[in-house]
Structure formats: C-alpha cells, structure tokens
Image (cartoon, rainbow, N blue to C red; front, side, top):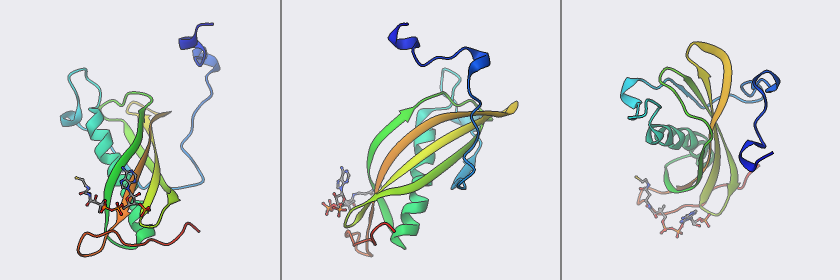
Length: 144
Ligand SMILES: CC(C)(COP(=O)(O)OP(=O)(O)OC[C@H]1O[C@@H](n2cnc3c(N)ncnc32)[C@H](O)[C@@H]1OP(=O)(O)O)[C@@H](O)C(=O)NCCC(=O)NCCS
C-alpha cells in the first residue's frame, strides 16, 4: 500500500468518532458565511483565532490573571471545516515553565446536516505568558 493511503480505511470500516466525554469544551462556535475562503471551506485564520481564544481559557485560569500569547508552537489542520459545522474546542494546560504555559487545543466539528458525524479537524500547541500590570512576565503555579 502506498504511503499516502496507508491510514485510510474503507468508508464502512471507519471507526465512528465521538466527542470526548471526560471533559467539557471551553468554546463551541459555528462558522458563518463571512468566515469562508475562496475554496468554500472555513478560512484557516478563523480557526486559528478561535484556537487562540480557546487556549487562553485554561491558561488564564491557571495564571489567575492577565496573559498574552507568545507563540504558536504547532498547528495542524487535519480536516476542513464547512460553514455551519458546530465546532467544539477542548483545551488544557499541558506544560508549565516559570512564567509560561503551553496549552494543547483539540477541535472537533459536527457536520451541519449530520450532527452525529464527528470529525477531528485541528490540533495545536499554543504558549501563553502570565504578565503583570506593566506587561512584564510573572511566575505561575506549577501543574497540579
Ligand atoms: C510575552 C512577553 C511578555 C515575554 O516577554 P520577554 O521579556 O521576552 O520575557 P522572557 O524572555 O522572560 O520570556 C517569558 C516566557 O516566555 C517564554 N517564551 C518566549 N518566547 C517563546 C517562544 N517563542 N516559544 C515558547 N515560549 C517562549 C520564555 O521561555 C519564558 O518562559 P518561562 O518563564 O516559563 O521560562 C513579550 O514578548 C510580549 O509582550 N510579547 C507580545 C505578546 C502579545 O502581545 N501577544 C498578542 C499578539 S497580538
């Protein structure tokens, strides 16, 4: 089997993906016509903005205060998102430094006319830094 087809499964043998049941999404949102690119899919920049917002939720909770985004460490678009898909964003702090927190964000889409069909569309690691009132880095607690 060729490299590019190794991970593909026939339609009827594909395992049915479900939304995670052990955690709550930090954000759920539906892309609208203004979020579409020229190819008819959702614009990648729209997803990146939502991922940044979603990742900031656990980071701000952990830091107990003001944070800023310092880096997008990795970003993977696994499947396209279409207008009207219900997108659920799951995020957790996975690594903590002295002032920085790396957050893992996973995004699932439920197709507009087939809500039982769940697709994992994006995975990303984003790093945030806790800052004080002068925008200077401040220490954060260790991971529990
Ligand atoms: C984030 C910011 C406060 C860091 O200030 P700084 O003087 O560079 O601070 P430091 O060099 O001490 O770095 C702070 C932390 O960020 C981490 N960091 C810096 N650059 C990083 C990168 N490219 N990737 C991952 N972590 C990074 C450092 O490792 C450090 O983490 P630690 O304390 O856990 O070890 C400053 O760069 C800033 O204000 N950037 C703009 C943020 C912003 O406006 N974001 C929104 C963009 S529109």
